Image (cartoon, rainbow, N blue to C red):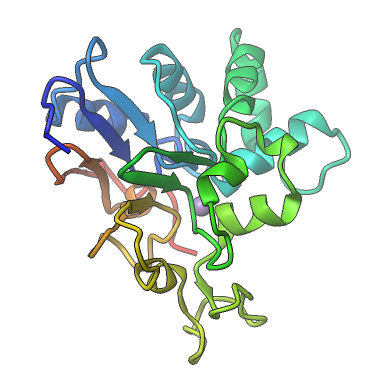
Length: 246
Ligand SMILES: [Mn+2]
């Protein structure tokens, strides 16, 4: 496919409320909303200092994100007052004049987006999903099977059947578990590149047909963008560590 510099898809790693760095990254890539499209790879909110600012800026710029586990969690709490967990970020957003609008906008975003050459998901794609894009694109997570949502927004390691390790992701589970994207690269007759976030401990991933963009900005690392048309990585340093590493 010919490179069209006029219309770039700019994928942005986990924002987690890092609004200042989001603005700095937009400067760095010379984002032009009249021609470029911004695709945050999920986890726009939580942990960092300005979740509201990140949502507002993304919405104003016409961004087309996928949702991450933190986004889905906040939206579930918004829809269901009995939903478990701390509600601090939800309260922050609801305290803003435009909070309800921001939440409604976020709730319309899917967990997977796809093009002829790229698939975008927050965490991972299940090895058994023959057509991951059809599974969940253009639909709110509330219209998608919970098991599909959970894998897409949380997976790191899985086995060839897509089962997740019982003891979690750290320390890394032994074979046959592998980072889910190993199974993506093993797919035959699929030339699409998958772009994702969610895995700050692993950091930047640049493997064949695989781009991982969570470089831990909220922990004091970097905020990273991938420009699909030119296959370029750009990043800006965190202004400080906003949250301790888990
Ligand atoms: Mn995440």
